[in-house]
Length: 264
Ligand SMILES: *Cc1c(COP(=O)(O)O)cnc(C)c1O
Image (cartoon, rainbow, N blue to C red; front, side):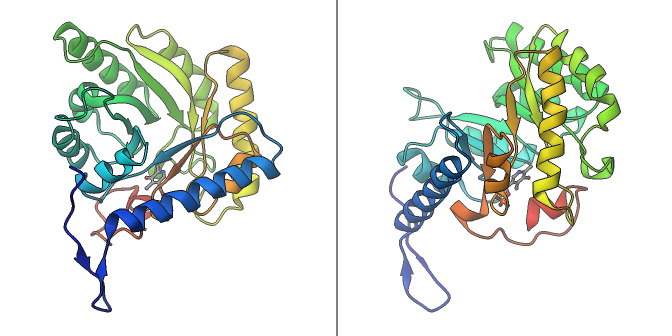
Protein backbone atom coordinates (compact mmCIF):
# COMPACT_ATOMS: atom_id res chain seq x y z
CA UNK A 1 0.00 0.00 0.00
CA UNK A 2 2.96 2.33 0.15
CA UNK A 3 3.37 2.60 -3.62
CA UNK A 4 1.20 5.14 -5.33
CA UNK A 5 0.75 6.42 -8.84
CA UNK A 6 2.05 9.89 -9.46
CA UNK A 7 -0.61 12.22 -10.66
CA UNK A 8 -0.29 15.15 -12.99
CA UNK A 9 -1.10 18.56 -11.57
CA UNK A 10 -2.88 21.34 -13.46
CA UNK A 11 0.38 22.84 -14.67
CA UNK A 12 1.44 19.51 -16.12
CA UNK A 13 4.08 18.51 -13.60
CA UNK A 14 4.05 15.22 -11.73
CA UNK A 15 2.92 15.44 -8.14
CA UNK A 16 4.37 13.09 -5.60
CA UNK A 17 1.40 12.55 -3.31
CA UNK A 18 3.48 11.12 -0.50
CA UNK A 19 5.74 14.18 -0.47
CA UNK A 20 2.72 16.48 -0.67
CA UNK A 21 0.93 14.82 2.27
CA UNK A 22 4.14 14.56 4.30
CA UNK A 23 4.70 18.28 3.97
CA UNK A 24 1.09 19.23 4.71
CA UNK A 25 0.88 16.94 7.74
CA UNK A 26 4.13 18.39 9.07
CA UNK A 27 2.76 21.90 8.75
CA UNK A 28 -0.45 20.98 10.57
CA UNK A 29 1.49 19.26 13.35
CA UNK A 30 3.61 22.41 13.67
CA UNK A 31 0.48 24.54 13.74
CA UNK A 32 -0.97 22.41 16.51
CA UNK A 33 2.23 22.53 18.53
CA UNK A 34 2.35 26.32 18.17
CA UNK A 35 -1.33 26.60 19.14
CA UNK A 36 -0.75 24.57 22.31
CA UNK A 37 2.30 26.61 23.16
CA UNK A 38 0.57 29.93 22.73
CA UNK A 39 -2.43 28.67 24.71
CA UNK A 40 -0.05 27.63 27.49
CA UNK A 41 -1.12 24.02 27.25
CA UNK A 42 1.21 21.15 28.01
CA UNK A 43 -1.40 18.39 27.70
CA UNK A 44 -1.86 16.54 24.45
CA UNK A 45 -4.32 17.74 21.84
CA UNK A 46 -4.93 14.93 19.40
CA UNK A 47 -4.91 15.48 15.68
CA UNK A 48 -7.62 13.53 13.87
CA UNK A 49 -6.98 13.57 10.12
CA UNK A 50 -10.29 13.71 8.25
CA UNK A 51 -10.06 11.56 5.14
CA UNK A 52 -13.56 11.86 3.69
CA UNK A 53 -13.61 12.26 -0.10
CA UNK A 54 -10.01 11.04 -0.34
CA UNK A 55 -9.01 7.55 -1.44
CA UNK A 56 -7.74 4.69 0.70
CA UNK A 57 -4.25 5.19 -0.72
CA UNK A 58 -4.09 8.64 0.91
CA UNK A 59 -5.08 7.05 4.21
CA UNK A 60 -2.27 4.51 3.71
CA UNK A 61 0.19 7.37 3.19
CA UNK A 62 -0.95 8.98 6.44
CA UNK A 63 -0.64 5.61 8.16
CA UNK A 64 2.93 5.42 6.94
CA UNK A 65 3.52 8.82 8.54
CA UNK A 66 2.41 7.52 11.92
CA UNK A 67 -1.29 8.35 11.90
CA UNK A 68 -3.57 5.65 13.32
CA UNK A 69 -6.84 7.53 13.76
CA UNK A 70 -8.98 8.70 10.86
CA UNK A 71 -12.23 10.67 10.69
CA UNK A 72 -14.89 9.88 8.12
CA UNK A 73 -18.30 11.45 7.70
CA UNK A 74 -20.18 9.29 5.24
CA UNK A 75 -21.04 5.74 6.20
CA UNK A 76 -20.87 4.10 2.78
CA UNK A 77 -17.63 5.70 1.76
CA UNK A 78 -16.11 4.93 5.14
CA UNK A 79 -17.02 1.27 5.24
CA UNK A 80 -15.53 0.77 1.77
CA UNK A 81 -12.28 2.38 2.94
CA UNK A 82 -12.26 0.36 6.14
CA UNK A 83 -12.47 -2.81 4.04
CA UNK A 84 -9.71 -1.56 1.72
CA UNK A 85 -7.41 -1.02 4.68
CA UNK A 86 -8.28 -4.15 6.64
CA UNK A 87 -5.52 -6.37 5.28
CA UNK A 88 -1.88 -5.65 5.97
CA UNK A 89 -2.40 -3.41 9.01
CA UNK A 90 -3.28 -6.05 11.61
CA UNK A 91 -0.22 -5.36 13.78
CA UNK A 92 -1.44 -1.85 14.56
CA UNK A 93 -4.89 -1.48 13.03
CA UNK A 94 -6.23 1.95 12.10
CA UNK A 95 -9.00 3.35 14.30
CA UNK A 96 -11.95 4.91 12.50
CA UNK A 97 -14.07 7.73 13.84
CA UNK A 98 -17.48 8.63 12.50
CA UNK A 99 -17.73 12.41 12.63
CA UNK A 100 -20.64 13.12 10.29
CA UNK A 101 -24.40 12.97 10.54
CA UNK A 102 -25.60 9.38 10.86
CA UNK A 103 -28.99 7.97 10.00
CA UNK A 104 -30.31 5.34 12.36
CA UNK A 105 -30.50 2.70 9.64
CA UNK A 106 -26.71 2.97 9.22
CA UNK A 107 -25.99 2.27 12.89
CA UNK A 108 -25.46 -1.40 12.15
CA UNK A 109 -22.67 -0.71 9.68
CA UNK A 110 -20.97 1.88 11.87
CA UNK A 111 -21.05 -0.52 14.83
CA UNK A 112 -18.83 -2.88 12.82
CA UNK A 113 -16.01 -0.45 12.13
CA UNK A 114 -16.10 2.68 14.27
CA UNK A 115 -14.13 3.06 17.46
CA UNK A 116 -15.93 6.32 18.18
CA UNK A 117 -18.73 8.48 16.88
CA UNK A 118 -18.60 12.27 17.35
CA UNK A 119 -22.03 13.11 16.01
CA UNK A 120 -24.66 11.58 18.28
CA UNK A 121 -27.59 13.94 18.64
CA UNK A 122 -30.80 12.06 19.37
CA UNK A 123 -32.32 9.49 21.70
CA UNK A 124 -33.29 7.35 18.76
CA UNK A 125 -29.75 7.28 17.43
CA UNK A 126 -28.44 6.37 20.89
CA UNK A 127 -30.86 3.45 21.08
CA UNK A 128 -30.03 2.29 17.54
CA UNK A 129 -26.31 2.40 18.28
CA UNK A 130 -26.69 0.57 21.59
CA UNK A 131 -28.61 -2.20 19.84
CA UNK A 132 -26.19 -2.37 16.90
CA UNK A 133 -23.05 -2.43 19.05
CA UNK A 134 -24.52 -5.07 21.33
CA UNK A 135 -25.24 -7.23 18.28
CA UNK A 136 -21.77 -6.64 16.82
CA UNK A 137 -20.24 -7.73 20.14
CA UNK A 138 -22.43 -10.86 20.25
CA UNK A 139 -21.40 -11.71 16.71
CA UNK A 140 -17.72 -11.19 17.44
CA UNK A 141 -17.42 -8.24 15.05
CA UNK A 142 -16.10 -6.01 17.87
CA UNK A 143 -15.00 -6.34 21.47
CA UNK A 144 -14.99 -2.78 22.81
CA UNK A 145 -17.90 -0.47 23.59
CA UNK A 146 -18.40 2.43 21.20
CA UNK A 147 -17.04 5.77 22.39
CA UNK A 148 -19.76 8.36 22.01
CA UNK A 149 -19.38 12.11 21.74
CA UNK A 150 -22.56 14.13 21.75
CA UNK A 151 -22.71 16.75 19.05
CA UNK A 152 -24.04 20.04 20.38
CA UNK A 153 -25.77 22.59 18.21
CA UNK A 154 -24.25 25.87 19.35
CA UNK A 155 -26.91 28.05 17.71
CA UNK A 156 -29.86 25.68 18.10
CA UNK A 157 -30.19 25.16 14.34
CA UNK A 158 -30.55 21.39 14.58
CA UNK A 159 -30.91 20.99 10.81
CA UNK A 160 -27.13 21.20 10.71
CA UNK A 161 -26.79 18.42 13.24
CA UNK A 162 -26.35 18.50 16.99
CA UNK A 163 -28.60 18.46 19.99
CA UNK A 164 -29.95 21.65 21.53
CA UNK A 165 -28.17 22.63 24.71
CA UNK A 166 -31.32 22.08 26.81
CA UNK A 167 -31.35 18.44 25.79
CA UNK A 168 -27.68 17.71 26.36
CA UNK A 169 -27.92 16.45 29.96
CA UNK A 170 -30.72 13.98 29.28
CA UNK A 171 -29.04 12.65 26.16
CA UNK A 172 -25.76 12.23 28.03
CA UNK A 173 -27.54 10.27 30.77
CA UNK A 174 -29.05 8.02 28.14
CA UNK A 175 -25.66 7.29 26.58
CA UNK A 176 -24.09 6.70 29.98
CA UNK A 177 -26.75 4.17 30.89
CA UNK A 178 -26.36 2.24 27.61
CA UNK A 179 -24.31 -0.85 28.28
CA UNK A 180 -22.35 -0.89 25.04
CA UNK A 181 -21.78 2.85 24.71
CA UNK A 182 -19.18 4.87 26.59
CA UNK A 183 -19.88 8.58 27.03
CA UNK A 184 -16.59 10.20 26.16
CA UNK A 185 -17.39 13.86 25.56
CA UNK A 186 -18.85 16.42 23.19
CA UNK A 187 -18.28 17.75 19.69
CA UNK A 188 -19.42 20.88 17.90
CA UNK A 189 -18.93 22.77 14.68
CA UNK A 190 -19.31 26.55 15.02
CA UNK A 191 -22.21 28.07 13.07
CA UNK A 192 -21.09 29.30 9.66
CA UNK A 193 -21.11 33.02 10.42
CA UNK A 194 -20.20 32.76 14.08
CA UNK A 195 -17.05 34.02 15.71
CA UNK A 196 -15.28 30.70 16.47
CA UNK A 197 -13.73 32.24 19.59
CA UNK A 198 -17.20 32.87 21.08
CA UNK A 199 -18.60 29.58 19.86
CA UNK A 200 -15.77 27.56 21.41
CA UNK A 201 -15.97 29.50 24.68
CA UNK A 202 -19.66 28.68 24.83
CA UNK A 203 -18.96 25.03 24.01
CA UNK A 204 -16.27 24.80 26.69
CA UNK A 205 -18.75 25.99 29.28
CA UNK A 206 -21.34 23.41 28.22
CA UNK A 207 -18.64 20.75 28.31
CA UNK A 208 -17.57 21.80 31.80
CA UNK A 209 -21.11 21.35 33.07
CA UNK A 210 -21.33 17.92 31.49
CA UNK A 211 -18.04 16.81 33.03
CA UNK A 212 -19.36 17.84 36.45
CA UNK A 213 -22.09 15.24 35.99
CA UNK A 214 -20.03 12.69 34.03
CA UNK A 215 -16.37 12.93 35.04
CA UNK A 216 -15.30 10.47 32.33
CA UNK A 217 -16.65 12.63 29.49
CA UNK A 218 -13.38 14.53 29.07
CA UNK A 219 -13.18 14.68 25.28
CA UNK A 220 -13.83 18.02 23.62
CA UNK A 221 -13.77 17.51 19.86
CA UNK A 222 -13.46 21.00 18.43
CA UNK A 223 -11.51 22.78 15.73
CA UNK A 224 -10.98 22.17 12.04
CA UNK A 225 -8.66 23.57 9.37
CA UNK A 226 -9.84 27.16 9.72
CA UNK A 227 -10.26 27.45 13.47
CA UNK A 228 -8.07 24.95 15.28
CA UNK A 229 -6.11 27.65 17.15
CA UNK A 230 -9.28 29.10 18.66
CA UNK A 231 -10.45 25.62 19.62
CA UNK A 232 -7.15 24.80 21.32
CA UNK A 233 -7.39 28.06 23.28
CA UNK A 234 -10.76 26.89 24.59
CA UNK A 235 -9.76 23.42 25.69
CA UNK A 236 -10.16 21.22 22.63
CA UNK A 237 -8.74 17.74 23.16
CA UNK A 238 -9.11 16.67 19.53
CA UNK A 239 -8.95 18.75 16.36
CA UNK A 240 -10.47 17.26 13.22
CA UNK A 241 -8.48 18.42 10.22
CA UNK A 242 -9.15 17.57 6.59
CA UNK A 243 -8.36 20.33 4.10
CA UNK A 244 -5.03 21.43 5.57
CA UNK A 245 -3.71 17.86 5.33
CA UNK A 246 -5.21 16.45 2.16
CA UNK A 247 -6.25 19.51 0.17
CA UNK A 248 -9.60 20.79 -1.03
CA UNK A 249 -12.39 18.34 -1.40
CA UNK A 250 -14.32 18.08 -4.65
CA UNK A 251 -17.65 19.88 -4.61
CA UNK A 252 -20.37 17.26 -4.57
CA UNK A 253 -24.06 17.92 -5.11
CA UNK A 254 -25.67 19.15 -1.90
CA UNK A 255 -27.47 16.06 -0.69
CA UNK A 256 -26.93 16.12 3.04
CA UNK A 257 -27.93 18.70 5.62
CA UNK A 258 -24.25 18.78 6.60
CA UNK A 259 -23.08 19.49 3.08
CA UNK A 260 -21.48 22.81 3.92
CA UNK A 261 -19.10 20.85 6.11
CA UNK A 262 -18.80 17.73 4.00
CA UNK A 263 -17.92 19.51 0.80
CA UNK A 264 -16.24 22.82 1.39
C1 LIG B 1 -15.12 17.59 7.03
C2 LIG B 1 -15.18 17.78 8.48
C3 LIG B 1 -14.07 18.27 9.18
C4 LIG B 1 -12.78 18.71 8.50
O1 LIG B 1 -12.93 20.00 8.01
P1 LIG B 1 -11.70 20.82 7.34
O2 LIG B 1 -12.20 22.20 7.31
O3 LIG B 1 -11.48 20.24 5.99
O4 LIG B 1 -10.53 20.65 8.21
C5 LIG B 1 -14.17 18.39 10.55
N1 LIG B 1 -15.30 18.04 11.20
C6 LIG B 1 -16.39 17.57 10.58
C7 LIG B 1 -17.60 17.22 11.37
C8 LIG B 1 -16.37 17.42 9.19
O5 LIG B 1 -17.45 16.95 8.56
